[in-house]
Length: 617
Image 1 (cartoon, rainbow, N blue to C red):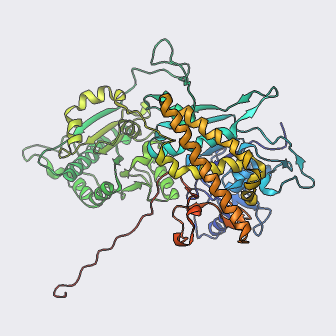
Image 2: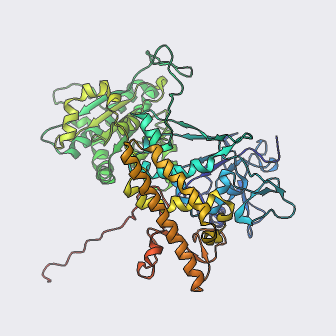
């Protein structure tokens, strides 16, 4: 079908994968010497399930000047061994920009890198040549190199965008994503031979959404939304699936105890569930396996940390003495629980754990109880709401009512996912000293009988004043830089004064987008148009002033950012948490502070409390 292989690319943050060849080279060298973990996100070959070891990672053409990472299966019988070119999986940003895989898996946080890295334009077809396996664009020079095949019209941009778990793209995160989506759609726009404009198709997936049309309009600027797949004659059936009324359902149980501390309620709940499951194991054997591991869900790291201390001490000791709580006059062993020795320490699934450690914890949760590595207790935060698809799990404890119904539904659906293994049991411990928890406990039955009706509508305001204050500089630079090859190279930032009229035409993209996503009356829309246009024009004026002043003062060269490959000069873009002293930056330069993440991220700190010895002042 062509010279370029079909491949898949993983385009995510540097905490999960390497962003540059320099980073992955250091990681591979450490991995092969036994000093570090594997930088490759997969542990086994997806084709033959052979474990991927250090021998499967090779830097091409060599370690000193690597241009690509080849991942090959170590099984010589596998179709994806080194002799056959390895696995078509790319996980280093620079290699993704060069090879341009047909399918890219990414997080919305990577949108923030569009103004910072000119190579990102290649993902939208902004290339001018190729050499058979690699593509080259404005960041590699204005014209094709000798021996390369020219691509006068570039490549077609992405034609299909699939946004999974769209209910998570809400609030402050959704607002920023909606702002950057204006640039994404512009870069994905292409014209047919007849000149008709074409936009990409968008599929958004979620199980918990309300007012989906409004959310799609604010996020993607699309006024029409269709449910896919459409329901059939029966609302519970579609072309792809039907509901099985005979399958065991998930059961919810509410627990609250006036006069007892919330930690005491959780402690006793964990002990009872763990020992009752062991009692069933003694009676029914492996059939009780789904309930032998408890998955605890917490709304904050602070609450999770408190429970971890209890799980490491009190839960273990009380579970081992469960028979002592048998009524004195009861003959024989306890009727409902059995003494249990917990074999493993609690594992965590939280943001403070490394990606590799989380992957190991997830793998252990799938291990049947009794096998090596099995887990008794796992404690997690809302990071398990999506992506934790382990059929074995059947028991969960939710500590306190989650902030939203959508989060509650998503998190609690992590258990009881496989009907053949039995129903899932979700025990929700509610704190009676919190009015909201108490209300949920008092209406527990009615709420759970129809909790999909309580799913909250998401709020997105991509062109609100606070959103523009934080994100407009990055959006504007990305729009100008990636829309025209003449602006893409690091020194392209200096082209603005000479081509200002052309750039002014791009402002209409943002203005029109603001109108498309709004639900305002005519007067408010006109005010919004004027506000967005004024803000964007002011930023362009500032940009032009910075470049012009640098030339007149002989202050040296200018570039877009310090993250650009081969950058040379003072950067226009600044990070919000930059080490640069704000006192040495002019007010104009401070206007180009741009985010490197879609989220409000604050650094973690340690607080140490010192106490003076007694008797000393």
